[in-house]
Length: 476
Image (tube, rainbow, N blue to C red; front, top):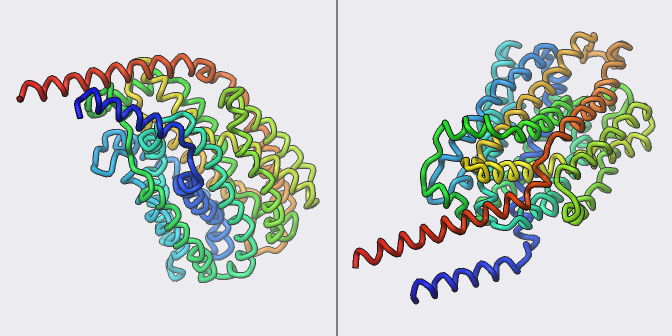
């Protein structure tokens, strides 16, 4: 077959692939990792109450320790650089999927801190395991995700599908976890051994499904054709960080969302205000009505931009937290507020990857390297710092508010603190995020940017093919 025939054959193959939709197995195998790591993160969200109520560690000490998480956010920036420079026979982003197993093992070891240790040594153990889970393993999983996606799929429709339809998978997995875990927690988490049993129940199945992406999806597409195989240099990263303001808007949203998510106020609210931790399962179950939203999002995205969908979700979330404040112990109102707060943040948590891809397209349009890994790491840095502040600040505030994990009834000041940190504080923070997202202007420019980038890639690919053909002819 001649060169012309080969090109025509490849074109027909690509055309045929583009006609095919993405089936359930492809969506599930790609998206299950999000559910696996999400559940691991949710379990780590219970670390504060494990430390204070089971291990007897003062809440202020736990809070100070988890605040140190902002330091391991720095590793995100380096992880993105390493991923962008990676070239292996498995691909650029794909090899880092093995970090799923590492993250889960570190999560298990967090709850296996030796009880005979002094308080200081317990804190050292927790710090080390927390750092491995987040600074190392989760960091590389965050950095590799978009790098892997744009090389495993080659259509904007695919990116939307895995971010929306595929987003149903982690949402359902986390929903099931949120329904099951509080019940199991009430039965098992009466001792350290019980906490370890809890983690082990989820560990093996979550590692298996979390690793499916590596075995099912290969990296097949080259989006670096314009780079002519040149390795990413550190100054390329610095140029992008200096020239792309939009990534910082995305990062700010992730920063705030993770402060709120990782404060872990819910378990304290239900234990000391509602009076029954097990009822968290009821409000979690009510969030199942959010799942159909993921099937609607692709249709909404055909009519508006990603950032507009996210802003609409933020307004719903704000309303949910205001209702949460007035709900007090009313389970019906708490369930409705859970639906609003949970459903409202779905667009930001599920679609932020699409915004990062818009930023990489913008980089290419401006003549810079795409750097999906480095852009993801900027967002990951903000995520880590936010999660660290969220995990740490509650412990510090509880300590200052007179919280005592040995008491069945907490002081009035502590109850007021728990209530405000669960309701109005998140509402005000999300109002600020909504305001900042008004400055994100890439959405309406994307059709023009993507068209220009596609034309340049095609020209670069043709030039590369002609150069290769010329080299072959010269050797004959």
